[in-house]
Image (cartoon, rainbow, N blue to C red; front, side, top):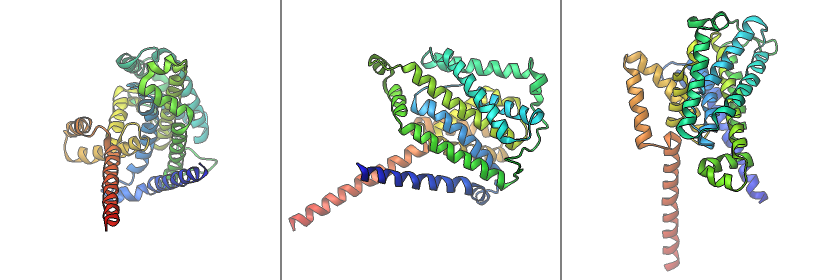
Length: 336
């Protein structure tokens, strides 16, 4: 048992190290595949958003079409704090994330009492409510159609990072978020979430408070979305009203499906793929949304496990072939 724990610990350390290298070196990677170096930081921010969404969809099996609400509220709160109250990015994040977690809990208490498509539609309805509130009734604070503009460049503990410095900070936050999500996934709570996804009714009959675990997943997922939204406001120094629109929720669903739902790292990879394709295709044709939609359909129909799922299947096929060859070689050696 101890040896197994040591092996698992080494694998986890290797995984985190490789993920860290990818995150911190992504600007140079993007420079090498099209000169989109400035896109790397935005990819990392969206990766945090997709990672949190996978805790809800991939682990718990709850499809939300309203996660833009958490992303947008986090962005607006952080942006508004920087615009009027503080020049500290840390304070702005600490303002945005807890409030988003509280909003997530309140929304969860209402929406999680419904299942399936009814839950998805309820989350969509609440997100659109927040969108229209920001668009007109609250435009004095949100900027209305223009969004929240004029946000100053914030500092981290007195240091105003620019360029790669800001990317490194956001990458470090993303790496910590990934580690935390993996810890949740492998914890007893993560086991309960996967059990809910597998058979919620059967788990409820065993006496488990299923609603409590679902609410916990919803709040944690919302907090991740709020963190990503706050980082978006810090990086862009601008919050568009579309941050609350249903298209933002749809985009994170597409990212998760392309990368691989339920794998944690897959949706993060999907975020990078989708943002890269959006930038490349939009520069080539005005019909890039159509092409992206066709790709999404292809993944859903022919590659349901996404990119990571395909890699896992190929790995299993290679291992099975290697095992068969080993058994054949052993049989030949015994016969000889």
